Structure formats: C-alpha cells, structure tokens
Image (cartoon, rainbow, N blue to C red; front, side, top):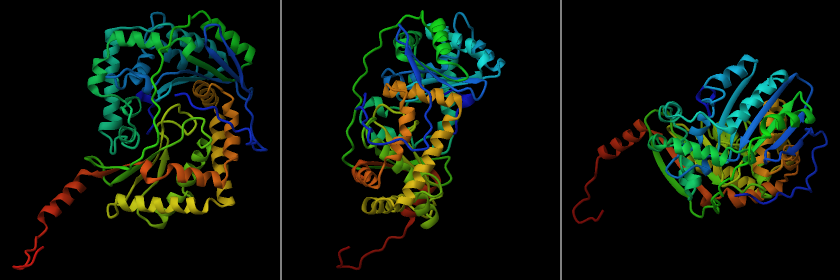
Length: 471
C-alpha cells in the first residue's frame, strides 16, 4: 500500500453451507457478472442511492507468488503501477481522479493486489481508461524503479524499523509459524532484495500477472450492469490475454509442536506478545466458526480475552485479534489467527498465555451461551453490512471474493454462514485449532527490560555451601 494512505496497520475446497439459511433481515446485494473474451471478469452492483461509484481492480497475485530472492517485490510493483505509462505519464493518474472529486489507493496482500477508486459516476470513464492503460503496459524506466525502491525502503523504515514492535505480530510471527518460503518470508522485503529487483523483473511481472485474464474489475454504485459491461468492453476488451505462470503448492498442515521465542525491542516501552494458531483453509466447514470464535475471544471490550485479561486479571493492557493482513474471508492459503496484546511489565508472557488458555478451556468445555453467541454474531453482521455501505468497499470486497473464491456472490453468503455457527461448532474448532501444539508465540520485550534482567541475574549474590554439603 502506498505510504500516503498507509493504515496504522492453493485453491481451497468448495464450501458447502446450504444448510445455513441467511438471516431473516439479511441484505442481499445485487451482483451481476460477465466475462469478456480476453478473460477479464467484470462485476457490477447497481445502487442508485448516491451519484457515485466505487471501482476495484484486483489481480490474482501477491506476496506468496513473488519471485524467490525478491522479497517485497509484489509490494514494490504495486507502487510502480502508480508511476505512469507512455500514454499517461507520472502524476496523471492521481490528478485525473482527485481533480474529478475522487480518491484512490492500492494494497498488496499474500493472495492478491487491489487498486481502488471512488468518484462521482460522471467521472467513471477516465478511471476505466486509466486502469486499462496501466494493465496494457507501464513506463518501465531505471529512474522510476530506483525512485520506488527508495520509497518502499522508506516505508519499511517508517512502519517497521522505526516503530515500536515493528509489525512483529504479522511479519515475524509468520516467519516462525510457517514452513514454506511462500508463506513465511517478509512481504515487505529486505533492502537487499528490493535493490536487486531489475527492470527485466518488472517487465516480466507485469507480463505474467497483470493481464486481463488474471484480474477482476468490479464497479458498485450509480450504474446499470449494461452500462458497466459496455464500458468494460470499450476500455479493456482489446487487451489480449496473457499466459499466467502456474503457482507452487504452498499448502501446509497444522503445526505439531509449540514454538516459543523472545525478541528484544529498542523502541518499545512495555512488553507485548503475539500468539498465533494456523487456521482452516479457505472453504473449510470450520472457516466460519473460526471467524466467530475470533470475535468471541477478541472482538471488542465485551470479548472473553478483554474481560479476562484486561479487566479481570488486569495483566494485559489491550487485546487484538488479526488474520494476517486480511480478514477471515479473504485468504487463499495458510493463514494465522493471531492474538496480539501489550502486557504489564510486572506480568509475563507465561501469565498471559496461561490466562488465554484458561478462557479457551472454558469455551472448549462449556461452549457459548445463546445470549453471548447472539451478541457476537450481531456485532459481526453489523460490521459486515456497515463496511459494504461504502461503494468502494463493496466493489473491492466483491472483486477480492471473486478472485479468491471464484464467486463474488460469497458477499451475500457470509452473513448466513455467520448466522449458522452453533456453540458445538465453536467447541469443535477450539479443540482442533486453538491447541498449544498448533501455537507459535513471540514475547517482544523492551531492550532495557531484558538488559535489566540480565544485570540482576549476574549481580545476584551466590551462596557457598558448608563444607561437606553438596549443593
């Protein structure tokens, strides 16, 4: 994701959820789809409530598919997509969109790279022209490449190297929880790998992964499907399809032994912990129960971990749960559910883990009462629907679901999947996934705290046993 908008930060089985009825008051979004002759999938979701549109172009490539010894390359390439083309030099993309009252951004994730815009519907055509133009080709130049290599390196400095905790809860934890390079390397990239990226790498990456047959275009808002498909054909239809390299097998089983390590942090003021469990593959019957479980454990102040660790035992300062850099619905390979918490210096990682395990054991033994489960589901459904109120979020969600699931209509199925989760489902996934043998833990402590402990240990007085007594 480009720094100016950077936030504070295997194909799966077919999901069979036919037994889960959609909630009675569910909101069904219109989803109309067409595939152009060149392989581009086009999705239109008409909504006349605002004279605006949201646009998303999602390419089926991300950190898992970047070249070996080129860590961070998918992210670097995302930046290069904003550096102009022979037809629209650098700056034209941004000024055209903002000049029409719009906004744009892009981001890179393990399984996709997305480019999003929102504008008044009267300004839609220039956006589609610009997106089609950079799908055709880019301004491949040594100057542009060097500039963006420096930009990404600075982003790493700002968001990782010079930040307390430095993203250890998603970068470092993945490096230790996963076995395969595709899953465990740093998607931000090493400086050495970024500097070694060449113009030939850039050209090959665009050729291999940025063709129309490896992309989904979604438009949501003040437009009819007929209008959307006509515009897509007008601007994208003549772009030829290109061969896409076959991906590697990056599937992994659950872990069978707990991994624990301690890290030193020169910038942190209080210690922190990240505890991560591998979760089911996309499409598993356990996916929705794990999503609900995550909300039960760490979704807000009413969650079990917040009430148990922050309010009850008063050993943690906060508790958050994340699924890498995505959501529990937007991944297509091995993924972690990670609990991240800052904790009090007079406590310990062992105490935090013991408290987590106690809360997890209660759920495994007793399940979830009806009132609590209803509250958790209501919060999840409200968050889901609130997100989709935004046209750009709606378009982006549909495009990503089409890329990952092969079905943009998953956007209308997820509420029913959430609503269908039962207490016994929760118990099953707790006992299957949230077990110590499937857990990876990083205890991130302030450097001063570690040094103080070392000094105390070395300066502690030693006792001498009386003669004739074995110590």
